[in-house]
Image 1 (cartoon, rainbow, N blue to C red):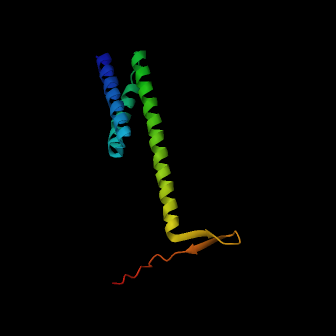
Image 2: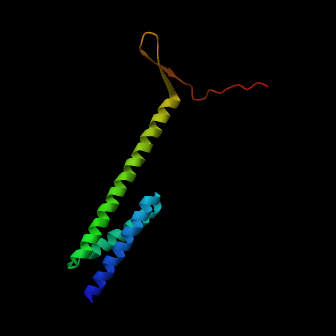
Image 3: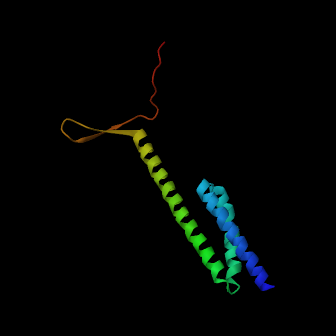
Length: 119
């Protein structure tokens, strides 16, 4: 009976890891968040029972490592976007130029300035 439950748990975890991979490839962060609870619950259940199927454990390990690489790449991309957005916000408030003397000059832009349109 325990072997059947253990096999079902490992199969279900394998399916969750495949779904996690698809969510990572699609950039579906909401789905990733939803899968996290299932993944943690299944891993906790597996930790309570001795694992004897080495082949299945190796397969699950490779899936976890694969997903971790994808997750690391996604986080790196999110950080790059956040940094780029921060630089764009900086550009909106000021303009940096170099004068004839070679020194940098900062020109502060007014946030509420507008352009007058004439007919």
